[in-house]
Length: 101
Image (cartoon, rainbow, N blue to C red):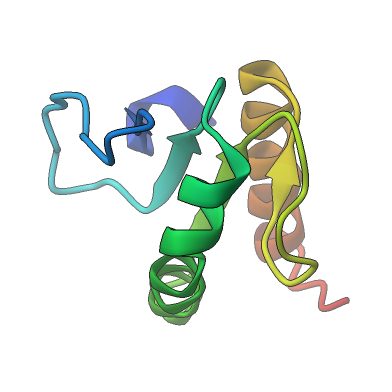
């Protein structure tokens, strides 16, 4: 299983700008890199992330946010990009084993 092949990493800065990325049609996992973003910006887009997370879950995908702080207990937020990939890998294993937590 190659997690990086079906994962898109996108970065958002304090001006709410998205970095460019190329999407492939087999992408089911998404990582939002919010490293260095302010709490105000994170709070202002939190509801969009919650909606996005629910949509991705419905297609058996994963959505993880990389951020220096936690701004919502319902979102999967980790401090590093490597931990985001690890989190997605664990969710992929759980799905393959049909585990529900």
